[in-house]
Length: 177
Image 1 (cartoon, rainbow, N blue to C red):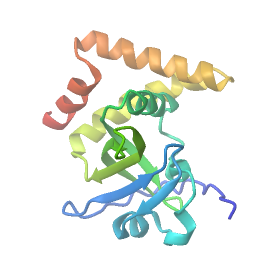
Image 2: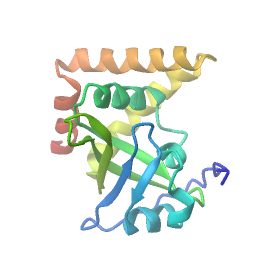
Image 3: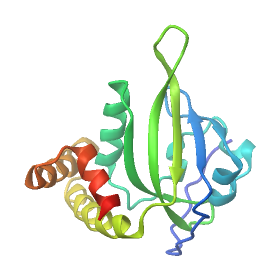
């Protein structure tokens, strides 16, 4: 099935703080499992998401460099936490606090990835929106995708340097703010 990316509607939707969005992917990021919360919030049927790239719910306001950081972290067989804005089938968007981790097989090597997403702290979303907007502005200055990622990453690293924190520390402080 060919996937057609929706146009953002500009409408934000919310989900219950008790709900947890769960999805699993193979090593290439193709969805192998999506729980009912994922399907309901994103507005897809299970058959529409299985085998599709997880990026099908990527909102265009998400900096490419955040996903580069995620993939680099997962390639190092480490977990990552991130604030992410996703987009449903109808173009509505929703913010999540994501925890993505490798799934290890019997041989001790990654066989896929597992992500749990919860309702994010509203103050953290306000803070991260500003940073993501600045990162996307830097990315948009370049036509080449690699240059976009490099520019967004440079701004993120500059921001982290100015705070004196590593990425993980920075993300945790947003939730505590």
